[in-house]
Length: 326
Image (cartoon, rainbow, N blue to C red):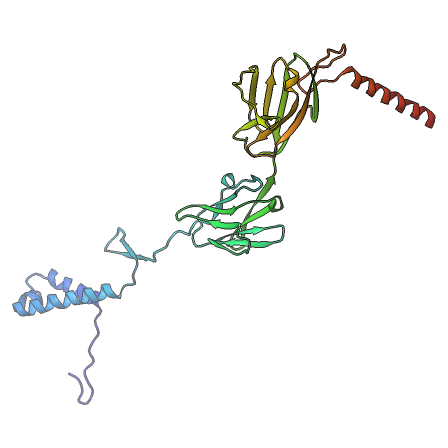
């Protein structure tokens, strides 16, 4: 009994102690559990209270991933959710190579970047440190430059229309990481050059074979076609004259050889070589009626004995001047 004026202290019982007490009561023979002695309504209220307590207990636990370890009784480990770090942007040099472009054509500079995520790609011209593009936007007043990129593509392209020799140089593909990641691409703009071996004049003996070889160099790709003119008229390979053949070999150096058998005085004149991607070249052919004793034949031209005499005379004069100076 408590003393008057002093309230009776109630012992606070933890959930674990209450459970152990219930277990001890159930283990005593002949003793009935309070829940068994109670009425059905009391049992329902007791079960409802236990359910509410269990629900509150689980709601108080922090959110996370849980698993139960082995042992005597359940144990619960709580882990915070973690995501793997994103892969950093990576350049692909095998698809971001130097470019050689033909003047007045279109140049395509490609920069392939994997795992770009939320980073941006910029193009910078190093000649004047000029920012050309950022992402898909162009930041230059020169309308020949344009940024190209397609969705779900790793390629970031700088397109230059009507490229000129002054556009040659180094271009930087820069990714907006910290620090910036850069890749450099060299653009080389060339103008093809055409010339004919043995020009500008060739002397051919009557009845021999005229062999004119046209060479196209500094071309990023072989010409689609090469045609020949004789005195401003296109040479017909199936004309009644006959004996006309053209042999074309394409590569880094493209050659076109015009062969005319049994040369006649009417075959004399100007011959033009016209490639599809380069300026033309010409040579003047002289077919000689006489048959001089000293004649040098070859694919690159022929020379008369009079030309050789002039060369020997010039050498003799130079030798005499050298002796006088000594």
